[in-house]
Image 1 (tube, rainbow, N blue to C red):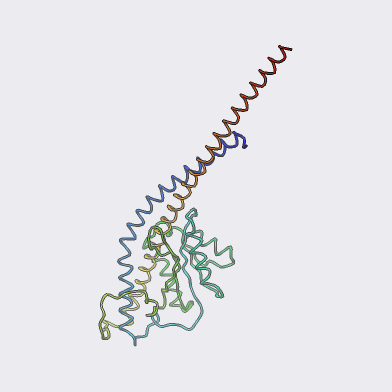
Image 2: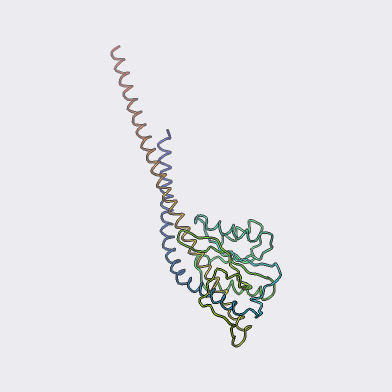
Length: 291
């Protein structure tokens, strides 16, 4: 039988932990609502811009431009999006492990979003070339432009051949999966999962020229894509943390119920033992008087 003071100490500790997990659940719930509002406002644009880009590439098969022409080199840049803090279930581990698998047998140029991503790759011997911290919790176009300018500058200077972004795709409040999309160069096969709005035949006519169009359009597309994946990752993180904290709170409730039952049993046992000792002492005294 456990000591009553030990059980009481465990109950007090778990109650304090439960208060923390419950508070974090409420906070994550409020943040998730904001993130979902941002996601709902953005996902239409995110899908539309990918459909538009697929439409352009489909009807421009003979146009050559550095942003849409594959390169033969193996210098690859990865943008990996994770969180700045933990306690979000498997959110951070899943996307970071997924990104690490994509980088095997390569010497990648690594840009991380979130402090956990930076520390994860540093601990595994990868050089993190750039790290953006604030963008993970509160995505903004300003940070997206910064990241896009760095990537496009490296691509224009012929320092990298391909650019990928690893993030967590939001499917529902209960399901988020790691995913990867290619940012540069753009190829029609990278849009197989996208449905175009209109099916038609013919080639596009560009004004003033295809080169000027792609030189302007693709950087804006990269910014929009980065913002879209950041919004999805933020929504996924808050959903994962809310689910994890809700599960932790329910586990704490179950542990408290068991401990309180143990406490009640131990207390009853102690009381019974004390009564037995008192009765035994009284009977002994009565026996001595009779003798």
